[in-house]
Length: 132
Image 1: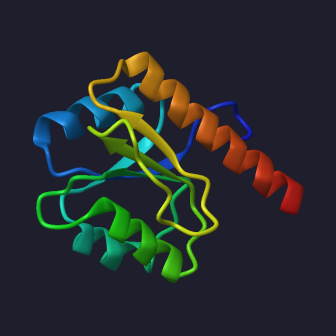
Image 2: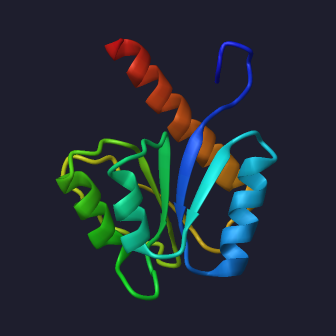
């Protein structure tokens, strides 16, 4: 939240399924969040060098790549941004050393999705406040 009480969270959404991307981004945007959509992990990796995000949402089963490998690439770059995985598998294991793994299983309710996102953002902002 900014000083005016408005949500100014910047979220990267790495999702290659158009209908899922639309559903997630629309519901985040109506809650005041800025969503940057990436259909390919390569495009996200190129952008993350120059931009910071408050949260990264990754589809584990991307068409041309593996979301878990993308997580490891993110961590190898020293990026500590929280990651929320979207998956069809109810048993997801932590591949990202030192990362608290958060995920939501498809199909999910929008309410549950927004609650997870808000919880991760709150944790991030509280951690930043503790550091600063």
